[in-house]
Amino acid sequence: MSGEARRGSQRERLIDAMIELAARAGYQRVTIAQVSSRAKVSSATFYEQFEDKEDCLLAAYRGAANRVLGQMQLTGGRDWSAAARRALGELLDALRSNPDAGRLLLVEARAAGPHVRRERERALDEFERRIEARIQAAPPDGLTLDIPAGALVGAVRSVALRHLHAHTEDELPLREEDLLTWIGSYAIPGGRERWSIGADTRLPVAPGLEPPPPAEAPTRLPRGRHGLPANVIARSQRTRIIYGTAEVMTAKGYAGCTVSDIVAAAGVARDVFYAHFDDKLHAFLEAQRYSTQEVLDACAAAYFSAEEWPQRIWNGLHTLIALIVSHPSLAHLRLVECYAAGPDALSRTEDITRTFTVFLEEGYRYRPESRSLPRVCSQAIVGAIFETIYRHIARGDVGALGRQLPLMAYIALAPFTGPTDAIELVTRMSAPQASVAVS
Image (tube, rainbow, N blue to C red; front, side):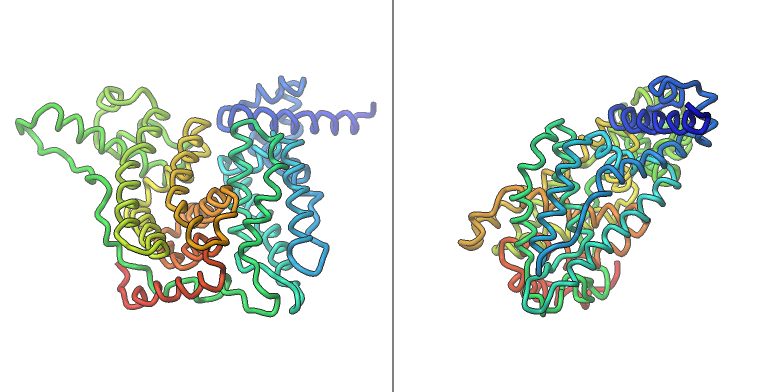
């Protein structure tokens, strides 16, 4: 074997090792020594091929994208259905055949550094442009889809990720028909303007943030002797550490954050931190869990405050968005940094988001046509909505999230009401919001 061919082989083995180890252990936990050992090369050989660990992950990401997405064809037929059937079938089959590549593509790429994030955003933008171009190409006498490409990607990702987490990727091809049914619930005549990508999906201003904070914001205790009970002191310290953890991880990311950073942000001594938490991961998991029940309770209270189901959905989404905007650091920790914090954090986030499917149950009884919809619709809808939320938080654009309320409500309602009725309902519910000042 020539030197060039040998180096190529070593590079491919290192890429394969990174895909496997990152998918199974989490990128942040993988070391260069482990990758080199798995590839049966020396660490010196690793550095001949890659600058650092992230450079290797970047190559692995491109390799995983080629395995999973490279063969997808968004062509065929006069309307969306033939192209969607072919593309979705190829995608689900590729994920079944390459689950490690799928996990790296869907999870670990979100845990990486700036180079991989930029590559992921570039690849995702290109993929979504291809989907949008195919939707827009529908002939006037055919059918097209009134839903943004990003929502479709988020929905399919959510369903796929659930199977990849459970190691039931062999069942993914069985979800094809159910997902096609959900996608088809957004179908409209090809000659009609697509409401979901127009200006009416955004409120002119963000809605007011009426809901109270889900839990007390941390405050420093009085200096000197204050005679406060021990439990009050402990609660104050713990809450300040939790908020400090969220603030630092928003600024530096999970990987870049240290316990020293957290105690400085919280204004507590190092021994106080260790009196409450074992390490950085423990603090992260507790911050992730903090006030979760209060958020769910607030959304449920808003949901049941209305008589009609569409208004209930609107109210629940409004409250969820308001709480996210009110506590951006905690939202960033829960929904963005969870990918870097490891499998326990990610599983907890997936469990929390999946809880919101309960608010869609009434939809299956909204009209006779809704009764036959597969239950995967709920997971797809929640995946599409939280993809929108994730992108705003990851971009640092939480303040504009409230303007997306009409689009998120439409995505939730359309499969059950039909796209036309969903637009009418959302338009009516949006009207009072136009005059609300930005909070």
